[in-house]
Amino acid sequence: MATEKAFIEYVCDQAGDAGGLTFRKMFGEYALYCDGKVVALVCDNQLFIKPTEAGQAWRGTLSEGFPYPGARPWWLADALLDDREALARLIRVTADALPLPRPRKPARPRRSAG
Image (cartoon, rainbow, N blue to C red; front, side):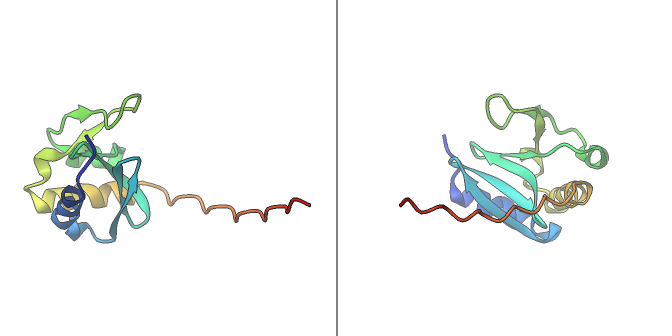
């Protein structure tokens, strides 16, 4: 079951105090970005936070889950959806602990067939 757009919008609204949130649809599911860094995945209408050492202290009693088959375990954060402050804090701490993504290489011009 793919994630509904209304659900990802709800997650972003609840975590809005983290600042700099955006999302992108990927394979029927969503990646949640904070300041350009992937901090969470939303799969099957469930919120999975990327585990970090810094976030461990803010994790609380969140269980681990797998956002998709073959994935490493992420923190299943559905329990925080009704606690805006705790959710925003965990997302902010996670984003601050992650490195900036590498810049993309510019696309190479294609050769024309001739």
